[in-house]
Length: 183
Image (cartoon, rainbow, N blue to C red; front, side, top):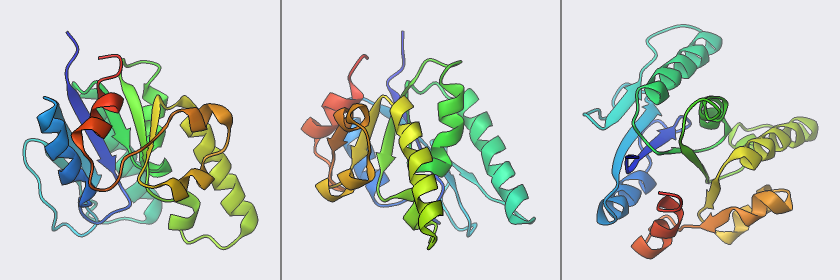
């Protein structure tokens, strides 16, 4: 029997964003469990049985990113989640690679264009990162955005067909159709 558990993954925030507890409240209403994995860059975040934080003690950017990827790899291999919900490209890479070996659905939660969250100014680099992001979207089972304005970041008919808009204050009816599909 497949579990009813969602694994949320966040790495750009310094804490768990407010959207996550709101989503968890709605998931509880439809009998889903949850787990959260995030990169706690300040070391002040919460942790409990369902919240796992990666805290990098020292090192340069490359070792911290590699540490995050290893932490994420271990977290995904040890979860019983049937749905993995990364937010943005930096947290989608590992779940997308592992999807061929594990049986879970990916609901790709896009709040902003990843290229712009990096603060890139070079148009070529912005276009390149957005192309990679759209490639990852192609392999996702569902794509969530929080408002219609973000649809501009999503290229391709197949990707746009997977889009659902779930506001930052989700309602049970909106969430249920995306999370209970194929369950």
